[in-house]
Image (cartoon, rainbow over all chains, first blue to last red; front, side):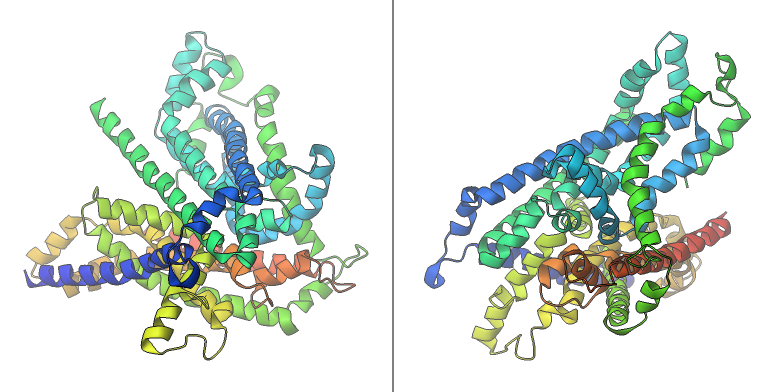
Length: 260
Length: 306
């Protein structure tokens, strides 16, 4: 029993020390962003988030981007990955390699090669921040690939699709009515991850001179630290809520599988 | 990993397909389905990558040269590489040690408990999406007017910035980086700790072993490869990180990613247009070495475990 007590003590110490270490900055952000004149408390930093037009515009850009990138990612990955499992196993390794490649190439390096490419992109598609959709879809590939791959591995895709095909379903029907509903949990997971990643992305947006949430937060910090800190705290809380929700999405699937 | 299974099973055509050629060679039409994905990735991932890798070997007129690469080993650029590697190695070790402790603390608890959920979700946020907000978290905590700075100055009489503006240089970056390195360790290392079976512990106890013999002969050897793998991953992660450093350090470029920012935002010396690409190549090489060693290590282990 002695070692169990020791374990409990050590565990408590670790949790306390690291807990304080990680919570202290959050408390500091809350404190800093509610500072008023002469040592008083004020919510001015928080209310001026909404009044800042530049910040709101950038937020809209980022929210739109998170949707467009998730949609483009799903459109590109789901049919290709399902098709490879069904008909093109030769491509499996190449596609996996390409999807995981962004892990080996830091975003700061990718942006060096993307700068000349975006001269063309902006020539064809205009100078909208939404053109970042292309770059962001690349950035989310590794995370999305893993989530979708895990989803596809968990179902018997071949049998399901052959059953549907033998009943006369077209490939489109198989994809839309068999594959997508069966891996919807994986698709939700992949989408939530890419939303969180896009909302937090700074490197590529800032170096290609597009106006996104993180770029504005950074710029704003030079003039008014309070507002930037308030928005930063909001970003962290929002990402936490997204990931926390994600931990329940995975669990619900486990439970339904057991019930079935 | 999972990648091998479908490749191994399907070419044999074990499943009888109702359509003639489906099980054998895919038709030309079958390949067409992969075209949009391959075209997109070709344009937006492969092309920019090649542009960097090839550009690293070109002078401003486009002719082949080794000059950009040899410039990596001189002066400010070389110092930045050394500093980047030091920063990444140091924060990888700190992150791995404290991250492993934290992982252990939540792994021995209730697997469906709230504490574990909160730590895992919080780790995900800091490890993958911290970026700029993390820099501001730091300004709020230990910046010139930060909570801790003010507290120490007003109540204890310690001036955090007495020596230098350390927060905006390497010591500050080290401190900030631990805030995404420790959480990343939790995410990477938790599956390994979850894989330790309670039966092993019981077997050790029933044979008269102590906690020490368990970690020395069972837990330790099993966890060493995933620990080293995580250490390499943390190194690559810190080495690639840009956002937090960029938001924190606006003057000067102590580390490689910030040097590349310098090349992208203007301060280019004539004749050195492609030096930024050489820096990029250098980063890719360092990251690839770390990842390559990791792959070799895990392959070894996979063989050994089976």
